[in-house]
Length: 239
Image 1 (cartoon, one colour):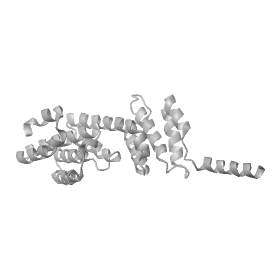
Image 2 (image 1 turned 180 degrees about the vertical axis):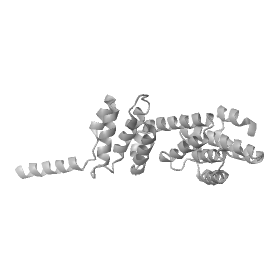
Image 3 (image 1 turned 90 degrees about the vertical axis):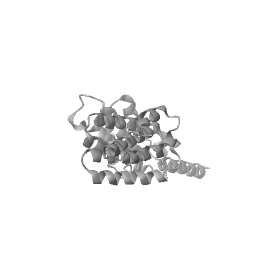
């Protein structure tokens, strides 16, 4: 009997140590709003051999940077907190091989992408296309093959005087279009970014006196936005 109990204990112990860490300490720090310490502790985990490959580490790191990016009087070391957040979430997604973390924390990722979209829009409204291009490039950390970001980067390159770079991005975007089977699975942020990319690209074609090319671009996407009143209103002049 004693041997059986010992065997059961060893099995239970083995099961316990075989389970992936849950990082409850990071969860508590996040819940308490102690974002500087959350960042520090997450970085420590990212440097340990036993935990540096766990996507949860980088998720909490991203959450810490994201929250602190809204603090106006944050310390100098966090001045690029939002960029650091995007870097961390990129590592998280890269290490999340089965997509489990991305699925469980999709609301945070959507929130992050919405903030990134708003940042891009602000720079475009300010005609700062170089800066907008830099932010658009960071979309790939969250969505590696984002078609909207490709069109938008092309437009930003054109507006910055890099016509060769613009055409390269537009060609990549056109290739991505042929591989998309179902636009209904796109998130609201992805759709808004795509509409922005299409609009800015169409504007560039108009500036190049290629109105037919602008119309063709808009029309090939129009069927995927049927029932979207904002799409019709925004692109009516091109259709």
